[in-house]
Image 1 (cartoon, rainbow, N blue to C red):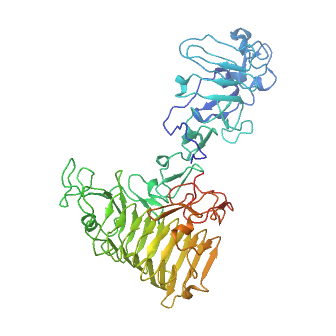
Image 2: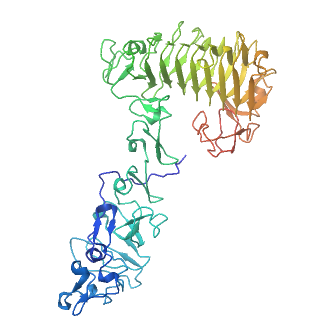
Image 3: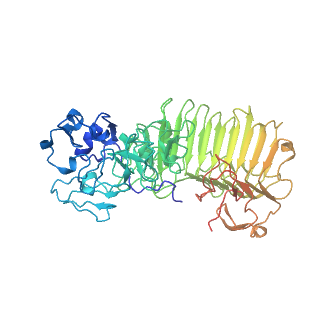
Length: 564
């Protein structure tokens, strides 16, 4: 989806600006302060007082001293004479004058209509009329600049300027193209060509404050990061909104030979000197030192269990390279997250064939964020005790014991956010999609639960369940009951599609494709307009298709919004 703020050209602090010499305007203005166009007006100048001068003196709009009053023989250019002849210029000194100068010649080309002047690299034009449009030589400003009507006064918010020519610079209304936005509007270093406005950002590198490192391209403003792609050098600390430091990055590539063979005895701090195993990288993590581990799909699968050391350790485990890496740990959890940890994992597949690992991920007393994950064919996808678990844009399918097993002793510690995700295609012998035990708070948003066969309902609440479940904009499909008896009275279902189908052939009118646990909604099928998008909801669906992004707009229920 193309952003509202279309990037066509940007100018940051340090880019070339435009400040042509304005000989005649200096008499009226007193001075021009650089690129910002700051104007200081001599109100006593004769040009602003009907040309009034003392006996024997005449008013020159080109003179600065003595309020512009000079001896008649000092006026050598008729264009300087108040009320005198000009080359298609103003007839009173109250109309600002503009000059565009080329260093090679002083010849002028004037359009007979007096409305448009094109200045070539070898000519100079000294022409000003109301509503003049001037195209300056690109060699003078670094890019083509279009100027509009005359103006005087404030650079920003000038009532004489507007539209895509919002700034008053050098007595002309101009857009940001060819200007130095950092000087025009401090804090807005980028130029958005279509609107002519200086904006905070057009890309993430425009945002220089650590607490707002990401560019919201819909609004062209800097914000806290909310996605790992917004921190290309490392990853996003999703709880603080800041990018993880570039000073701590480890690379993992289980490739024993080739151009960059791995070595677990090495430093692992560059792509050219990678470690072999994710487990080895985890042992190098330190308390109070946030870090990023980048994992590549090497020539061998990662089969060793990875245990994050206990304590205040923040780490993002993300992939690099074109192929997604896969953890295939035979028996133990592929990843163990311990008390005090804050762990982010993005696009690292976890799978077994046949399903043996139980669970694929173990979390105790920590915060765990799973983004764009594919967890499949294990016994249980996740077991968590007093963990804050976020599952976003992920696919969980093919498990034989159950999906997400969330247990808690305190709803402030045990929480589940399931967003833009699938839990599908399972034949479970213990529980279904989600099992909540004890004190747990669960929020399910824009998610699809379907084809989950188990001995209990897809959502099961046991162990004296004392939490809450909120389900919104989702699709929960399966035989009645879809929520266990222990959930009753504690579940709130809003704008969510529910139906009773349990077999794939029965769902061909609801979903168009069934592939690897991902069920894509059928265009104009029963999921259409089943959800209502609200401000703060995900801007895209599970596979990146844009959502409406208009508060109150109808949307497809579930994890997928099909592309027409």
